[in-house]
Image (cartoon, rainbow, N blue to C red):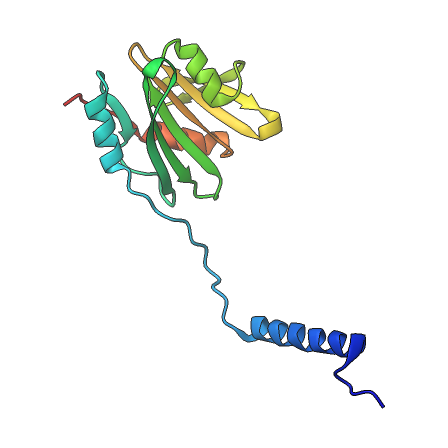
Length: 176
């Protein structure tokens, strides 16, 4: 008579015992139930950006309620222009990003950030009209504001009211 642990059936039984043990462990081990979104302070990035560009910088005076700033960086755009990126998880846990640069042509910069060059409307935020753009295949909504020395872009999967919340939080910080 063959031993129970030999051959193919022994292998199957040993594999089943290992998988059952792992499954039992996962079933009884405590699992974290709260979401974790890393919070990244952007104040130093904004200050550094302000020192590297020849115009006043825009940034949120305070983050919208229940939003989590989760990314920020300064990058080189086309023609050597500096670009500031501030990323957020919104209150509805969608993505929103604020981007600004004096890259020229401004329309090309805005189209690249929005992944679209077609305006679909305007949105009033604090008495100021922002151009709306929408790219359906990426579910990407974008607000664009062209100023004389800088282009402001707010983009992401967040809905129009949430993007408007971020736009209304922006304020110009004097060059200094």
